[in-house]
Amino acid sequence: MSFAMQTRHGFVAASLVVLAALPLASALAAPASAAQFASGRITVRTEGAGPDVVLIPGVNSTPRTWATTVTALPGYRYHLVQISGFGGQPARANKEGPVIQPAADEIARYIRETGIKPAVVGHSLGGTVGMTLASRHPDVLSRLMVVDMFPYMGMLFAPRGATPEQVGQVADRIDAGMRAVADAERPARAAATIAGMVNTESMRPIAVEDSVKSDRDVGARAYREVIVTNLMPALAKVTVPVTVLYVHPHGTPLTAEQLDGIYKYGYGQVKNVRLKRIDDSAHFIMWDQPARFQAELKSFLDAK
Image 1 (tube, rainbow, N blue to C red):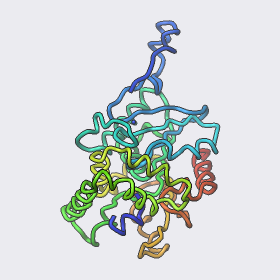
Image 2 (cartoon, helix red, strand yellow):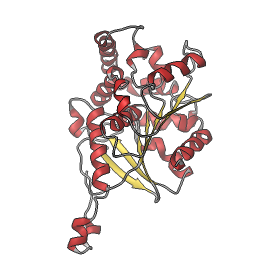
Image 3 (cartoon, helix red, strand yellow):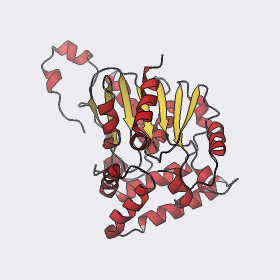
Image 4 (cartoon, one colour):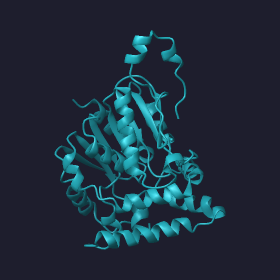
């Protein structure tokens, strides 16, 4: 979800073959792998070798969001999360109820069961999941990067001073609008939306395809949840270093300096935070400004 769009209107277990070849005692003592982890909320696959990095995509997105980044930055073991219901993944446990907190709790369980302590990177709703993870389970991660997400999107959707009830009403209207789009119109609507979220035209078809393949109900509920969820008070519980990358979207009435101030306010409860505005980019910074994003991510991952 881009601020531009928002201000305008708006992934089971696979195999135990490897452990089967080990002595029983070793197998019992060994931590779980991504292939062993079973969840109705998420699936995880790993790629590469090195320090552990968990990557979480946004609403109606898939690990394809990170493909160019993973290729450009070898030397890490990437744990690629997909949320059930997005990008053609069956909804399963996300068929009803909230999406964000259950996803964060399952990522925490995955981290504990695999015996890792990773850096976590979340884009968009993935950033909201990352913040939820860091505030509810601060012991499981080493650091957090949030890519273009604010801790309380309701502030940017509703008028200044709006109550949670008023924010909820705005979210309800947006939810209804998303559900009203006919199936035949979804590709065109997705293309129009993604055009405001991705400046790099060659990358847009990936996001459009993932969006059209996503479960409409899961996507709408998750989007609404992002709007009404206020994580600002919970950020005081975050004990790991946090880096926030954000953009100054085209069409926003805010100046860059005003936006900087809003982000400083929004993340004010985080004890150790670094805020970095990436100019000349839409919502998918990893696609629009790949060199700068990769440099920022490399610095974040290698920080001591």
